[in-house]
Image 1 (cartoon, one colour):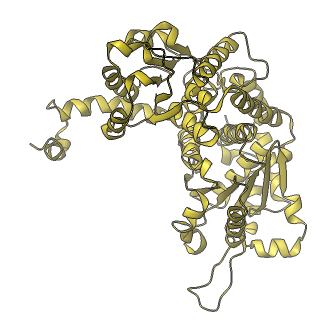
Image 2: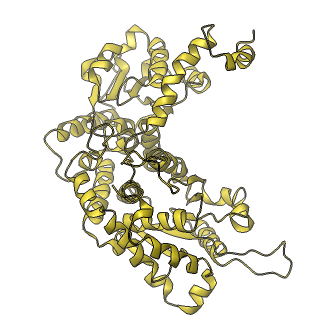
Image 3: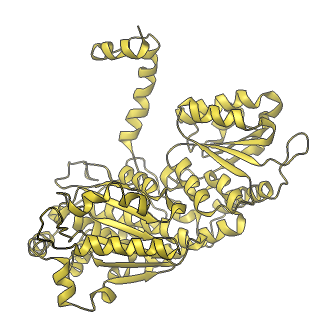
Length: 496
């Protein structure tokens, strides 16, 4: 397998990049008044304006050659054919199959069972022993099994379903507040864990199991690919909602882990979300490289990271309903691509995952965006226009203009250089279809960058190491044997 810097087109990209680095976006727009119309693309409910990226008409053909040389077309086929693409764990990646218009006989019953239960919960048909509808769900998960459903719920809940409360941390304070406020007899608990061995989920699950008590034990649900483990924990079989083992945690919001979101947004809306995802799947499979939005975003990401040497990226949704989007992308991209060893098990000699940070637009303008406008680093940004509010839209466009073009001033401290790479992604509205388009756009962007960087985006061995070390550390904090270098810190933490 060949690494990024060994591709035949790589020397040409480096040469072109050294010339492009000398250009300013002001000059590119002055020389080409029609640039904004040509450096733009629509896919489904999304419109991408990438005219403020530091690329020219010569850049994209070179980048698409890079995609061809990396074998993107056959890699894409393997993904959608359900072949093994997670080599280190010998698994396919079946998240596209979860939203397929015609799901497989294996997946369809799983999806239908979760949707049916969620709709009955939403309409008050799921009741407690006293015949009272259950109107609260405590969703316990971590990583993708918590962040994905929470993103969906915050974006698309309509207030007609049960209220969902999300718990990820083992910090007792948030759960303690919930248990003080909610009544066990009016609450369902959903434990979402693919392996059903996640320490944080099991810990919070045991606390909630005690809170529910024997009388309300049947109020515990599980969404998992390990139903036997859930049953051993004490979840009744009819309350276990399986998911496929080929669906990774950070790609799992299409599966039963989103049961709480399904109930909050409704079956019809969730099905439209699935359809939006399938629509972007079809676009990714069929559109030519230069008209393919996930491929284009991935190529621009490689350009900014490996040619312009940008070490981070700002994500700025203008709309509070997508306030979790930067965090969602942090997990999706940095957990998938934060790797330094390629598929050939050799260290790579190029940067891979830039640091992603962000916040909703107008609060970000009064926080870290000063560093984007006048700081010392080149920080590309992605501005999402989510809201239909004209004031928010105006602020989004103003930031895009300021980042790209700046403002010259004789006073050096007031001079804003501009020339910061910036893409603007406008949603037709925050609909289930548009959100399905958006999530799959970035799932496939990550997959393409994995191909370009010769990485496996579907494993996370660094995460696994931290989880394994937590057990011995907990034992040491309770007085067990610990490494000598921790002795002083343990004395402080144990208050010896």
